[in-house]
Structure formats: structure tokens, C-alpha cells
Image 1 (tube, one colour):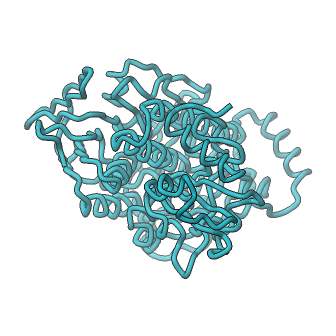
Image 2 (tube, rainbow, N blue to C red):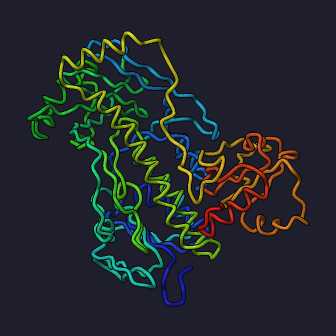
Image 3 (tube, rainbow, N blue to C red):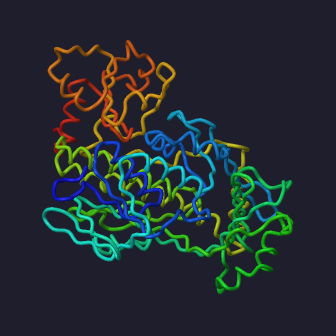
Length: 488
């Protein structure tokens, strides 16, 4: 609930996937949240098409992961092909990750967003669509968000989840750092009129120097093609119906599909210099933008939301110092940058137009090809810091305990796992029970894997391991993380 003067805990600017997730996670932690969104309805056409198991785990906390899965298809891997469709690289995605969810799925974004918004609307969140932000100003006590129509919103904090052209980023006054990759691609979303034989059931990256292109399966009856623009080409050149039909004709009879959308996007890697200015934060595309070659753009935004939500809640309910909020960018920026760099690396491999260079690439990869491999783990752990101690930084596994996924048993707080029974006489028992769940691996053997041979393990509310080690050691690290001091 808002304060007596109408001030709420948090205003979220933008109701896309990142903003909706942040609003829902914060509301579940008891914060009063207002969301303002310029558009009246969900954008009706697909943009993002893939998410990974960590995103599904985040959606699990919001109670909508199963509904998202119902309308999705599994992603079983990715293959890189030459122009004549010989395999350069081919990698399989494991069906299930250690988080208990499918490793990767393809979805229809308007359906995905509608499900996510339903979950948020079921919580105590004040969602104001059709509300255009005209100014954002902060002072020592809070943030004022003025709207084109209606009363302004006063909040203790504000987070801009308002996309690549973020108004909030402009108020923070930070610039975007360019990682050095920028290419324009035509994205064509199709609705198939019937079953089309020969279309792939996995993502294909066709490394053709004459026209690099990508094929992406989507839930029926949809399918996506992406074609790189060549030097000198314009959007008007490639978006003509006859050109689109010709581009995809080697894969599909254009008469068996309807173009639902075509658009030219500039694929680039960008990272904002500052993600926080006192009471203002950035998340999602407002903070970072990645080429789509690994399907991680939306995933990165939801990771931002999960990381920031528990920290805002801990500070606002008085259990953490303000310095905890500074660990948001300290953790998320290097993580997002590493994923962007990986995507850029794949993009540079794919977007090779020089025939001589492409031939050398093909010869090297074909000579080294040993058949199907596992998709490499390009998602890094969090860097060590105030909130990541010894043995920490990795996303924790999620076993089932008595038939229930572990996070559902733990809830929104911390998890302390030990191999030593912790009785009520332990001096830190009350402190831990006030902040989360304590599980003894002797009585709940399913959590023994989280210990990794140590006496104790602390899992943060965003499901990353804070620290492993002795019970007193991990307790000291957790206390220090909430107080903003790293133990010596």
C-alpha cells in the first residue's frame, strides 16, 4: 500500500517483459508498485522468440511458467550451415536444465506477454496503460513521474524498463557504450497456411557470404526468417513483397505462407555507462542491448528484474543497507556484457561477407567438425563481490522436494542449506528464520547437491548462490552483504 501522502515504494516505467516481471516480483515481496506504460495494449506482433530455463524459473515465482510452456515448443539446438547447407557447427540443447525447467523454448511473444501481465494484474499492482511519461525528476525524498494525462506518481524509487529509447536513461544522463558490432537485418514473421515440409525444427544460421540468414521455428503456425542487409541496401529495397518472396524461396514456397510482419532492425551491442542515479535505475533494453544471435535479449532483462527486485525489497523493508542497491550494476553489467560479447562473436562468425574469408572459415570449421556437440555454457556466473562470496556466483540447482520444486517451498526469501542440524538454540537461528528458509540436508537429502561438499550454502532470493563454506562463515557473508561490507 502507498504511504499516507500517496507515495508508493516503486514506479516502473514500461510494462514490457522486464517491467512486468520487476513489478510482479516486487509486489510479491510486499512493495507498493505503480506501472506506467505508454501503449494501451500488448504489442500484437512477435519480437523476442526464445527464453531459457532461468527465465522460466523467474516466471515460476510469478506463477505463470506452466502457462507459458503450454503454448511453446522446445528448442533442441542450433546448427550453422554453409551456403550449400553443409554443417559447420551443430549443437544440442539439453531438454531439461538443473533448474528443473526446459533449457530453452520458442514462444509467441504477444501470448507470452499476455500471460505475464495476467500474473502481474492478479497481484496488488497499480497498472496504468495508455500513460505517457512527460518528465521524471528526483529529490532527496523520492521520484516524481509526471504523465501526459492524469495525476503524477510519487515514489521512493523508479526503474526505467522503457526500452532502447529510454526516457529514464535520458534523465540519468548516461551514454551507451558501443561494443563495436552493428548490422541491419530484415526480420520476416510468417503465418504458415498448412504444414510445410522441410522447414527446420531447430534454429539454423546460414553462413552464406552472398546473404547471411537465419531460420527460427516458432509455435505453429508461425515461422521466422531473418536476412542480413548487404552494403548499400535500404529498408525500402528489402521489404518489398517480391523481394521477401525471393529471399525465402529456396526454403519455402511463398504461396504457403502469409507475411505477418516484416521489419528492419539494427543488431548491435550497447551497454549504458550508469544503471543508477540515486533513486533512478535502468533495466532491460534501457540498460543494455544485445544482438539476437543467442536469443538472450529478453532473458537479460528478466535477469535484471530478478536481481534488482529482492535488493529493493530488502532495502525498503529495512533489512539491508542502501549499499546493497549498488551491487545491482556491479553484478549485472559484467554478466550482461559477457553475454553480449558472446552474441557478437557468433554474429561476426555469421555476418562474414568477404568470399575469401568465408571460404577460410568454412574450411577450418569443416575440417574440425566432429558431429553434434552440446551447446556451450556461455552464461557466466556472477562476479565475486559484496553479494557473492566464496563458492558463490552460480545459479543454484532446483531439485524437487516431496514432489514440489524447491523454490516453491522456499518462497521469496533466502535459503540456508546445511549438513548440520540447526536447533533453536543456535545464536543465528532467529536471524535466519526471519529472512528465509533453513533446510538440513540430512532430513532433506535432495538439497545435499547445493552444498557441493561444504557445511553450508546460502542461496539468494534471485536463486544465485551467495556463498558456500562453514555455517558461521556463510552467515557472516550474508550479514555483510545486507550491510554492504565484505568480510576480511
